[in-house]
Image (cartoon, rainbow, N blue to C red; front, top):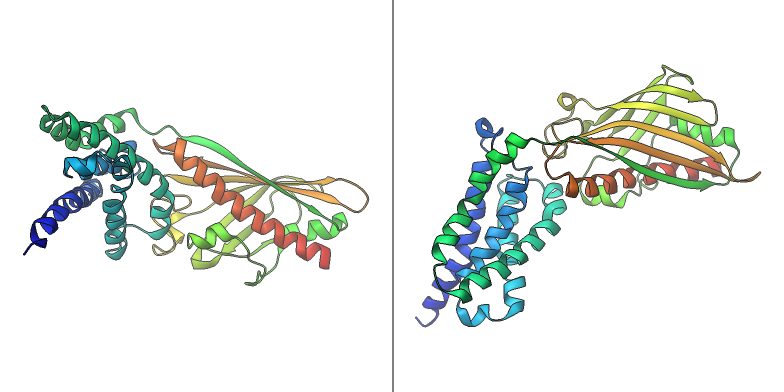
Amino acid sequence: MMNRPWLTKMLIVIGIPTLYAIILRLFFGIEKWSDLFSVMSVSFLCCLPTIVGILTVYFSSEEKVRNISYRIFVPWIPIFIFFIITLLVSLEGWACWLMILPLFLIAASIGGLIGGYFKLRKRRTKAYISLIVLLPFFMSPIESLIGAIPGTYEADTYIDIHAPADKIWSNITRVGEINQRQDKGWLTRLLGMPRPVEAVLNYNGVGATREAKFTKGLVFHETVSEYVDKKKMVFSIKAFPYEIPSTTMDEHIVIGGKYFDVLSGTYELEKLDNKTYRLHLFSHFKLTTTINFYASWWAEWIMKDIQNNILQIEKERAEKS
């Protein structure tokens, strides 16, 4: 009996913020309102965790709120519960949540500090809390009117290879089947993203094409636009979302989709000395969101992981052939 008031209080402190997060996610996921209320927006990705933090601390006892650590870390609890629930009901994918987790935790802690200020201030705070809870619903339509500004970014990688130029180049133009031992892309593996399988150019020269095949049905259609034998190859990249099974990638990070697309790639072979060449691989990709400031960091990291993995494979094969 003595534990019931404590349990009730915990249900309020943790349950109400978690319920708010779920309701907001469901509302922002309604397809017919997607033009006004998008999950890939500042209104959702920044406001939701901040408000969860505010509510968690505001509904806590004043004694606990006076502890700064409580205000910073306790708001993480409803965030993690919210994540687990959305994963269990397949509302979101593992990769998507893992990428936004740092943003959510920081925003939740900031919200906790704001909630502590309101809690300790005491006077006329209920009206402010009510307005804050409704903020995403007013802010998102305004954000949609401003619109997402497309941004183009570059991921630049390189590796030094101790092999003749012709052997290196042959492994660039024709990447044979990649086995599990050679596949070392740790970040993309952690995110459960498709793994590289093979990529074979039909001939060496401008206009040549190849299909860079990945697991789970992902295929990059590449067309060579610039070619200098054993020195440089530039190619456009196109992924068609309708070719990719819906279970392959989260809809918010699908390549060639509404928010993320890879545009082009370039190989350049630089001679360092008689026995060593530096192989450069860089790509250009496009993001179309209102959170490019955060999404571009993750996208570049993912692209570099993919490219470094391919470069390692090409180095190993060139040096052994």
